[in-house]
Image (cartoon, rainbow, N blue to C red):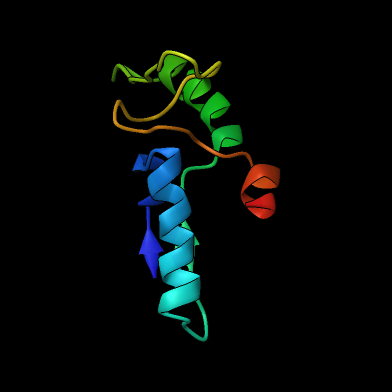
Amino acid sequence: MSSEVIEHLDPPELALYWEIHLGVLQPNKLIVTTPNREFNALFDEVEKGSEAVGRTYTREGVPYRMRHEDHRFEYTRDEFQDE
């Protein structure tokens, strides 16, 4: 299982991640979780109805807000499926 890891990897390391996990280790099953960018739109609504101030982050070259300052990307469902 790999939970909330891949979004922290730059493209060269992400390519190695798949190569190592699926090519070298060859598990019977690999469960991978990562933030869903489509869900981020809900944060705006949550912040409006809450006294807590939410935080989203931007990264140069990435045209959408993300949940964490260390994320390199956040996939949509379709992007994750295609990966």
